[in-house]
Amino acid sequence: MAKRKSLIAGNWKMYKTVPQAVDLAGRLKSLVSDSVDVDVMVAPPFTALAVVADVLKGSAIHMGGQDLFWEAEGAYTGEVSASMLTATGCTYVIIGHSERRQYFGETNATVNKKIRSALLGGLTPVMCIGESEAERESNQTFSVVQKQLEEGLEGLTSDEVQKITVAYEPVWAIGTGKTATTDQAQEVHEFIRGRIEKAYGDSVANAIRILYGGSAKPENIGDLMAMADIDGALVGGASLNADSFADMVRISIDTVTNKT
Ligand code: 13P
Image (tube, rainbow, N blue to C red; front, top):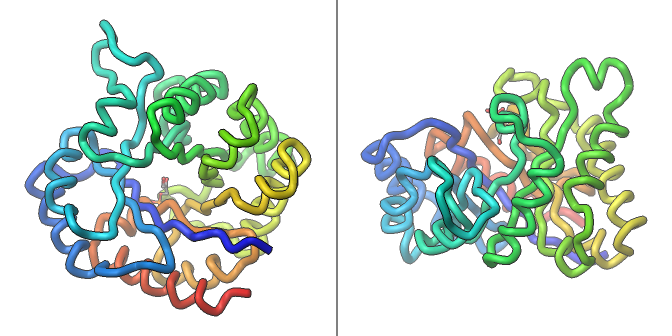
């Protein structure tokens, strides 16, 4: 099986002022020196991207935006384009996070437009999907995830899909301290990879990275990373502390080194 390089990504959400972001990025830079076996990315708020890019210069840590708008430029008050993100040093962008779907009306259709514009702009989209607690309890997990995946990726070529990172984030596990069990997570990751294989073929399915998100922390990252179809994590709360995020990177490197 083709070896996928894992990714540990920190989504800072609406935390960290500029000075706080500089401090966190500086600490991370000194702790995560050389993570050749896993990719590391942080997604600060827009206001801190430029200063964080400056701090991270010369380190192995990549930077991403937390969202973008699909138009190249124009009268879209409050929005940020792909080229604005790349010009600050972003190479990734999170798209369709459940908080954006829940509070800002994002749909699979807007996610699809945003993914296209990210790819066009040379950014790696981290496309978030995941079911709510009610959907899981009514046995709709697979159908919800399948719909998000199919509609989010609609019309994209295999080559484009291969460039995307998927993040499976069960909404009930985000910020709640309730992590999906490793078996629950693996089962959905395997399902997602299976759907991708059906639609885009074996080599795309083997190459695509699928991250887990939802109360990932140093205490559970090793078990999660040991699962066959879990290729990293999108970390919220635990990424706001340099020591705990760096621990997660270290543990992930150890785990993937031993993963067959
Ligand atoms: P927590 O790690 O705080 O649960 O957040 C997960 C998440 O939403 C990452 O995008």
